[in-house]
Length: 84
Image (cartoon, rainbow, N blue to C red):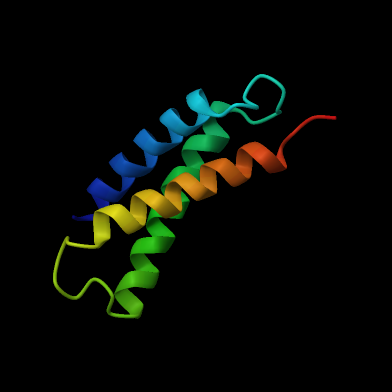
């Protein structure tokens, strides 16, 4: 998976995570914040996996790890931008 795949995964996870987040209506999280968090989370996961040689065999672990980290980043943005 190249960097274009990372961006596609981040945008897809950002959109889905923002739309399915239970606190979407009550939080101040905007759509662009969720997409940015998804892309940054996936990119950071890919860079960390390459530095630690976790992804040395190709795409076996890269897709699920990048997706999970992107989803966690979108969930964190949704929770941290909650209005009171």
